[in-house]
Amino acid sequence: MSDGALSQDEIDALLAGVNPSGDSDAGAAAASPAAASEEGDNDRRAVEDFLASTVDALSSNLSMMTNPEVSLRNPQVTFTDRDVFLPSLPERVTATKINFSSGFPGDHLFLMPEDAAKGIASLMNKEENITLDEMALSVIGEAVSTLVGTQITALTSKTGNKSIAATPPETTSVPKGVVALPGGNFLAATYELDLGGGKSYQFWEILGAEVSGDIARALTGGGDNKGDAAMRGNGPGRNAAPNKGGSTMGGMAGGGGSDRNAASNMGGGMRPTNVQSVQYPSFMPQTNPQEQGNIGLIMDVYMEMTVELGRTRKLIKEILNMGEGTIIELDKLAGEPVDILVNHKLIAKGEVVVIDENFGVRVTEIVSPMERMTDI
Image (tube, rainbow, N blue to C red; front, side, top):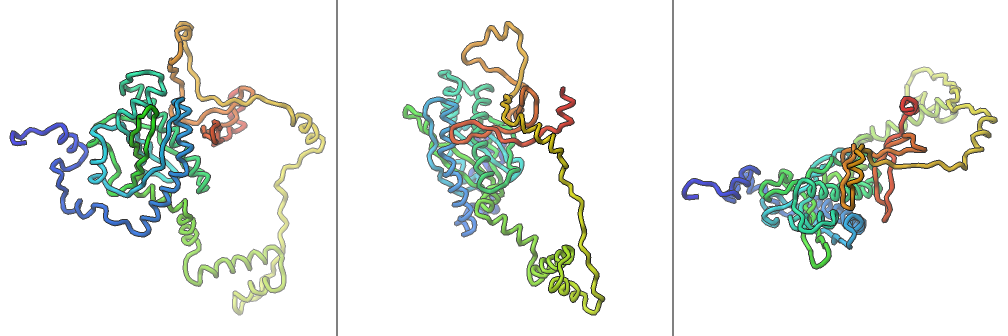
């Protein structure tokens, strides 16, 4: 830099907000990841155990998309930061940003060497010597989206959180210096990706510190306990509220004896309250026995259920020109719910999941009768 010119690497580093000289300021030096606290180490182990439990399913899904046997080996998980992590990456990487949008919202991305990305795209498209153009990057994004869908299914099963969702994937091929890594410390999981034929690469999954902490607490039950404590409060009042509510409910139900007297005594010298039971009307629908019998006659009738990924319209000449390897663009974006139809009538929407080695659909929305009527 004696002539005052910047190299390409220095330009990339400046665009990414990194000091090109490699010397961090005092604040950055102080922020370099030190030995993890006991709580942080527990979070790391919880996330590592979870990721390890999904490796077989992830490998199976990759193999289904690429046909040859492709595998991911158990990840090694560490807490790190940008300055420590970047030197472990090749000069150029393929990055897929697929943040969690709900459930555990925050930063989430996958990184792989460009050769690994070309290998996956070649296997999926059945093409040799592929280049990482827009189409190939879109294929990589779809592969990563499928992996994340598998993780979301497992997370939902283990934590009971049914609101977990991710943004559509955004895949780019960039110098490592411009990768948008999370700020501060983050969790990095390093997998071994085996594409067969002696081709093995490292494959990284990055989770922001907040995301990994939320997931770890949900997996270990820490999040639930924390929420319970917030609702219950602390000290003697924590027990007083349920007892008071219990006595009141006992009085409303018409209970006599000790419960009613206890509720009255809470008022000190106040006169006892005359509590009477309340008869609530039934909200259960009344079904005519004859109607119920009639519907029972068709309970064993089969109906055709279809899951529709999307639709498109093509000219006859376009259809005649189709062949093996042709890609058909549908009218749905990646991540949008698929349509569930019964006898070609839309009744619900859902998301595709993988159960063992089979595809399935998890229902996320039931179409209202009014919408079904207007769609006739």
